[in-house]
Length: 313
Image 1 (spheres, rainbow, N blue to C red):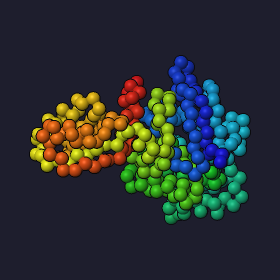
Image 2 (tube, rainbow, N blue to C red):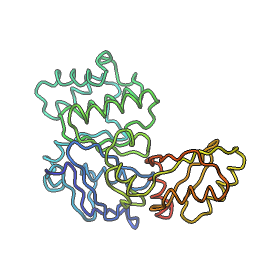
Image 3 (cartoon, rainbow, N blue to C red):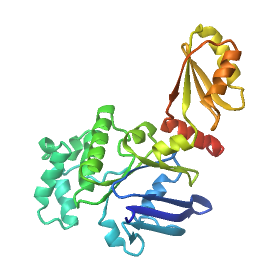
Image 4 (cartoon, rainbow, N blue to C red):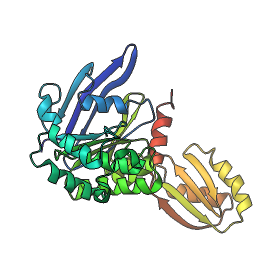
């Protein structure tokens, strides 16, 4: 099957600063793909190249088999996008905004299409109100509708919930999931909100200092990275456990140890067997009541990636 997005060895410089350094990744059709990194890591530069707003120094980008730099029109017609600037006209109503963009894309029955999208986004009761009266969350839902007017196969979303209140974030997140699962859209979701990406995306790429540090299925990254934590349930008083936690933090094959009540949350190095940890605790007089594995979060993976690459510069 042709990849929805394929980026091969893309580099981009701004003067002497190398913004992207030989970046490669791919996104399957129908995938929900998270693109993560701190501010200044290269996320926005990548998106601008995907949208042919910037030309790379080297490399190749294809969208559903179309070279984004040679077959621009065919590629762009397959993509909808929501960027930091939502592209909405404040003095126009929601219906007028969608009708305007629908006509740009040559949608024949643009009024019907606009009504369908407003209903999908839960904005049909506010269709005739000016965008200037909308909350940030409503604007983002309308921006999603704007990105959908030409029924694209791929949606590129750059920080779509930034500045949105928690309720609005849940609404946008729910809509994105529906667009992927019910409508079969490929989602390219760029964000630094780790929890949000973890809720939405199946595959992720982590970019740091212009380089892809990790890329793949989120569950496989958790396993392959050896980042599963272990919770040790003890029958001991809390106070002595502080001392034990501090001592374990100095053991070479233990990355971290934190006390939570009568429990110890231990991060083992990859390949370190749990039974050795239990034996070590018993040698220190700790009474172990139970052992449970805790699956690593995206935050754990991200922190490990930044640590291994020498931190932020």
